Amino acid sequence: QVQLVESGGGLVQTGDSLTLLCVASGGTLKGLAIGWFRQPPGKEREFVAAISWAGSSTYYGDSVKGRFTISRDKVKDTVHLQMDNLKPEDTAVYFCAAGDSGLGSIWAQAYDHWGQGTQVTVSS
Image 1 (cartoon, rainbow, N blue to C red):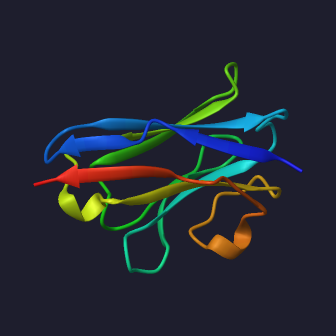
Image 2 (image 1 turned 90 degrees about the vertical axis):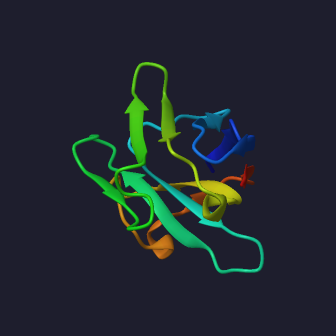
């Protein structure tokens, strides 16, 4: 069972940047697709970004396209979510998820392992 740990969340102002990190605790991300999802307060979970194990395929939610970038470092065994030009509507708990198939997906059902989440708050 892969245990995912997210870090890098925090409180920032509109227009600032943050980088979220996803790592496997006691395991490895090797072979896994990684997705980021978020849950704003009082709302349903939504897809943010995903990357295949190969790294050749990336996917983004419409609300973050052009502002967020997902990438992975196979040497360091990490996945980053670079978030630029943050807006108050980006405020949410951000979750890292891993899919055993290795294929990226926008659908939460495609992911087998989930982290506990990290809070991102963007003030106006």
